[in-house]
Length: 74
Image (tube, rainbow, N blue to C red; front, side, top):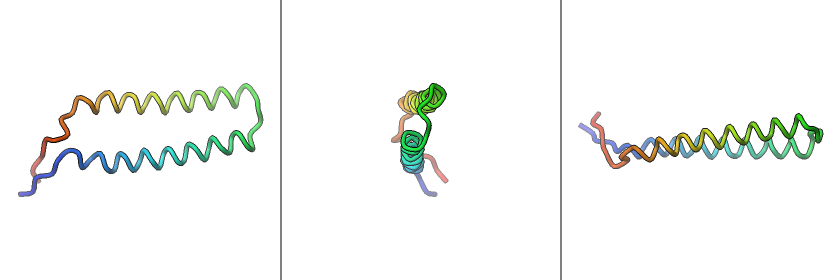
């Protein structure tokens, strides 16, 4: 039997967060450089950033409740 710690799940999550951050920065760069400066573009940028921050906050909040040192057996 193999015991795996729960913190192993943080590695793929961290990789996905980094990929999302890179994708978001590229999108924001293109919006500011090539996009039109209008109310709608600022609103969409705000909604995108607010949604991303909300999702990260919720995952952080629920992640604090988990004991990451626990193991499970395969």
